[in-house]
Amino acid sequence: MQDASHSLEVLPEETGSRLDVFLAARLGLSRAQTRRLLARGAVRLAGRPVAEGAKGVTLQRGETVDVEPFARPESAEAVAQPDLPLRVVAEGKGWLAVDKPAGVPVHPLEDDETGTVLNAALARYPEIQGVGERGLRSGVVHRLDVDTSGVVLLARDQATWARLRAAFSAGRVHKVYRALALGRVEEAGAVEVPLLTARHRPARVRVARPGEEGTRGVRLAQLAWQPLEIFRDATLLELRPRTGFLHQIRAILAAEGHPLAGDRAYGPPSDPTGAARHMLHASEIAFEEIEARVEDAPDFAERLRALRGDA
Image (cartoon, rainbow, N blue to C red):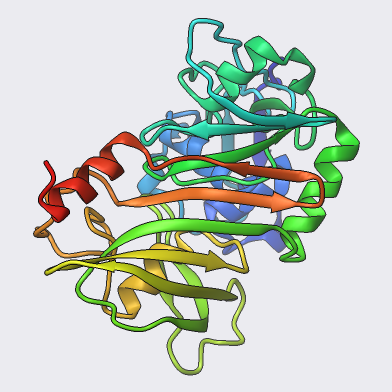
């Protein structure tokens, strides 16, 4: 179901507002949702289309912003795809653990997007539709980057979704990742660092600089690591994050001088491992009665064999 079109006049008290902030406040959307409206050309300022790159333009009193009809995320519905593979590794009352392949998003961003974990899950578990944040994020309690492989939890009813979201927010969910990091990591370690989102599209996170720690949007992220196997130019790590923040593992390891193999955003333009994507795999997740483990993704296992000389 789509909203009607909107014609919004800039009020005196809104003079000087950024376009994306203005749209988010007037339409009740997130900043990410307003950027998607701009990206698809659905916004006009003074009758002229506004590109996404102009999201920071400042508005003047009396200007008119027109917005084409759009589907709100909570009212849109993801398409069920019965032909899409779905590997369920564990399930219980109200929840589902899935092995997400690298390159597959957890959920759609647009109502006509397909090929995600949620599209596949809805075909087998239609009760997920409308759970949690509803719409295109139905049942989603946490996310993995598109190119991160491994275990993802989905909730099948509202009570389970609320319980799991609260547990993730409180850092009570046990999470284990395996990563192939560049360089030789000789010792175990742990850090707590302030992170902030430096860029939204494409997303990029960095460690906050001195003096930025208390600013809006900065979050403390905790990560512990243990080297499992050391190669000439890389190290297999076991990682235990206590927090959840966009790209936290990738940004922290890069800041420590050991970016993930294959990470084109946070690592060097070329790396000696030959990895085609960042080598990060969510191997284990546990909370109360929930326990799910998945083996290394095929390409992850292949990189390890090559580094060992087994390939």
